[in-house]
Image (cartoon, rainbow, N blue to C red; front, side, top):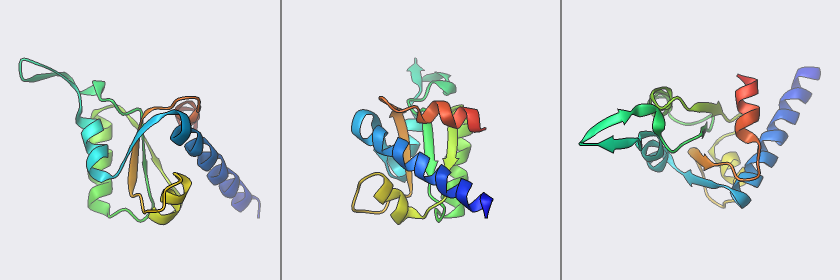
Length: 125
């Protein structure tokens, strides 16, 4: 019984931090915009200087995201040296946690604002 309590508490923790990011930070919702923020590096003379300079600080993926999309996002995040968090709920739950009335398969946090969501993700890994 103890492990389920910890999982539930962790989910509540990530939901509250995510709500704070939605109020005070900058983020993009959706698969295409997540890939755009991961790919956005500094380009000098049509050559990417450093792939690790993407805008994204943290990527969150829902549990029912298709495997091909999930692996593509994880691959780009690895190249951009960005942490990936696998959200325990489905895309409806992630949309609700973001305070939206639609489904969200993935989101990219570019500026956490007042939230410490990035620091807690780094400690968890």
